[in-house]
Image (cartoon, rainbow, N blue to C red; front, side):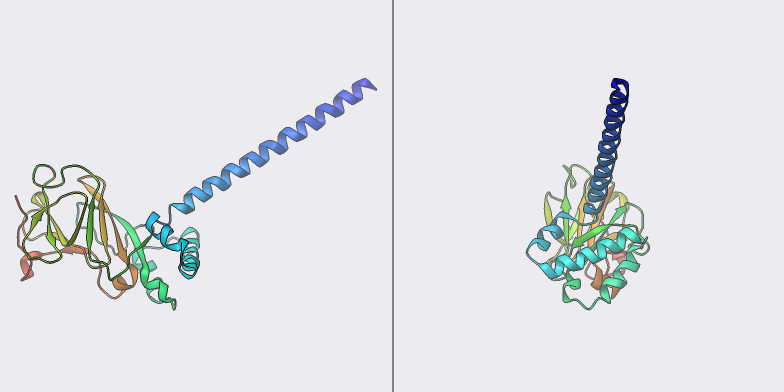
Length: 219
């Protein structure tokens, strides 16, 4: 009788152990899914969603789409541009760039972001010495055709130059776009999806063929 009770107790303990372990694994997987999903929406857009139910529902729909399908940046931009919601005009796409001549077409989507087209093009320098005494980036300001040195942290701009890129080579940052540099060699850019679908995308340009852009960077 005692032996039977001990065996029963051990079985019960084993069952509880397996149950607790299963719940723990599921909880960990759910947390990982939540963390992964949260990375699909940038912080600024999350903040805007808190006070805008319609925007929150729209973002949630596209977030789900990104989880379920492998979409390039230009494919996602077309879908957002065709959306009937007025809030879609606020949605942006964030991608990674490097110092090659890659453009937004076919780029991998990092996340959805907040990119109102009424906001001037901007660059955010999140590393020290991006300008004259460091990485030697210069920028064309929003309101001038003369270049100035890159200067942390935020500048409103039309374009980005770098001495190592040479002449006739710059990166155009259109309205509604924000380029964020975390180092001298790569950056993320958030741009308005609807505007880009209509042709107004951030992109590499030849300033030598543009009358109001300087041909060469500051050196």
